[in-house]
Length: 93
Length: 510
Image (cartoon, rainbow over all chains, first blue to last red; front, side, top):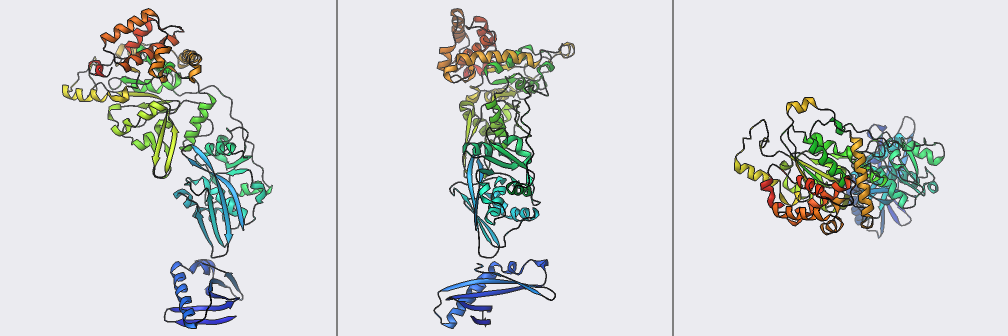
């Protein structure tokens, strides 16, 4: 169940927020036009992970919900000509 | 997904089995190593993915955790590359796990996936055999050394792809040629090359026959180095156990070329050598030192007086016990270190004291300081002290070639066999290794020899230790002569090996 898309606050932005069997799933979407700079997942650095955790906290606070579990996924998107491939790393970090 | 294989880490010279287990789970692609990996093992993290991809295998784009069991042992050396890679391949079902059981893996991987020659493979193989494993998989370059271990299958593979092929049944290793049964030893040097120096040659023979340590004193160019270098050529051939021990030490140090070391080692570290290099050590990876690399051979210390004091002091334990214990932050390791010491020094700082053709320019006080360095507790362990004179022109030009090493070695081997028979209950010692009281009991002196030695005690003011040394050397000379008892002649010769140009100054240490 999609909860939010491109949710913003003063700290930054969450790409996708979903709810799945009581777990809040925060999904970061990273797209790459080609393999030259590695896969999208490789762009999720330590500082980016920290930011995502802060954002998730802010999101929970604002929504006032009582969700106990949070999971972080990374969706790595290849933008090819004519077709796109999506690779999803569940529980990425 | 889970997989596990057996690897071996080498601590000192001993191999310890390590279970390398892998878990491939959810998460962003990463590789984590746990279980006290040392620096070289930590390096493997970045080597293994390229190696696996180069071998046309697949690296899982998931979170990989590799754990090294037991966790209380620090793992060192690059030899764990291969087991880590195989463990990940087993976890991702790229090799059949069931077939990996009973095998130990060792070898460093290159980025192209080839297996690079790795130090310590002999220790790995010995550990695998002790563990009752069926076989080892090692780099092709180390296969011959692993094959020295009996009752163990050895697979020498050129690269990771072949190792995987072997367990999938698509690749068969080349049979390893057995160790060539070649007792013929090919030394590059021979005793026959030494001109003149009859006394020194004889002293070397005695030293070889009884396992005695030697101090050579002589002017520059007298031939001290030349003599020392030829001592290994007259020592008896090594037994298989001795050869294996030497091979293992050289393997761990990464000095091994090919297979079994058959020649007795000759090590001559420079006098600037650090204690760690001489005795063994290193910060992370405990390496055998020169004393251990000289095991069952000769350790030659040229310019003995110039060596660092702390390095020389450290020689006491190996000379006493035939082993060194190295303790570092990384742990404690014991290395064998049973060698014959040959120390060489000039007779004085300028080097020409007592020389026939050049005058010594040294002041008396400096000679005193210098000769004091030639005494001390360490040289108490040196049974044979000898002056090596420089040859005159006539001697240099006009000498027939001396007796070849092989002939001398025959006599030495006979004398050693005699000692082994006599000391069979003491655990096969040579004369030099006997403790003083045992030496006195076992000497079997004739009455006249005994009274001669008693006289010498008074005349030369022999101390207890000095007495024991003369006794042991005399015993060796008797063994060389094939004599059951020590006769006066033998004692006279033994007394001659206490002389140095600074005999007067040395007298006080006996």
